[in-house]
Length: 410
Ligand SMILES: Cc1ncc(COP(=O)(O)O)c(C=O)c1O
Image (cartoon, rainbow, N blue to C red; front, side, top):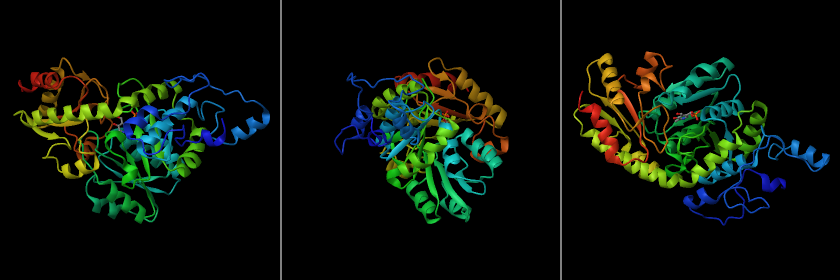
């Protein structure tokens, strides 16, 4: 395989201008000499080199297949497919979503650089920026997800990166990607958007001006709750020239088997995102009508503070995560009520994942956000009565009946 064929750019002979549904099924490396119709899984650590000259050339180029930490054909197919869906020049795969953020910071920043990040991002993302990167001299300012003036006020001469997630986990707050991109570029910084919640089936941050998209492929890209995966997507001057060498050194590489599972999962991404978003809207409307529910957080509802922006930015759909506060007085009663609703379910899975065909119910304060201090949780708006529901593909009536079991008894 020549160098050009091997780049992280979709070029397997497909015509230009294909729709996202087609790209999700068709984009991959060209088949092997056997002509397999379903993409092959290459389980190999090393790649045999035809001669020493070729080997020397390939080892000098992180794009060539030499050793599994650097690259693998199945992983490359995953990268090409995701890049095509995001409208990116390239993508680089990582073992998990969190290791994609690690690669982002390791590749882009150095001690003395400054990051601005929404304070409503996923709990582990918050911990990574607040605790881990600080050890290496990268300081992060946390700002409101939705108040652009706070982002603007946080800019410093050494600000190199703005990091946003939209909608956020679990409160589904929506930020304006185009406005943040303008702000970042005016300050000479880059904008990275965690697009896990919407996936490229609903939202394409690069088209709105973001420089990089980050994914937890563990969620909707796989779509069936099977494997961990992550990725960064963007221009090849970053993906190939900056992140490629960092990944080769640090080894947060995606396993070929996981890449193959997610590659196949992406083939049904658009169908799932549409069906799950429609079901979530129905569940959210039902929740809004329940007397024991104090508040529902879902961008697809007209009552959501950023509803209009979300509809514009997310192809008219709200995504498949809805959160709600049970009605109760004081944190202890709220926690007991939330636990009782969760424990009364018989269909939903009590777990902390999302993006699965199986609906998942979770208590963020004691799961995804349990490592935050109470003050950090309060600042992020994660109360003890908050329940997050990641809607899957069961019938909507079975989901609402399952929630009604506990809610009707509060
Ligand atoms: C929005 C978001 N970003 C990142 C992550 C981290 O991804 P992973 O668990 O694949 O490391 C998660 C996990 O739930 C998430 O919800």
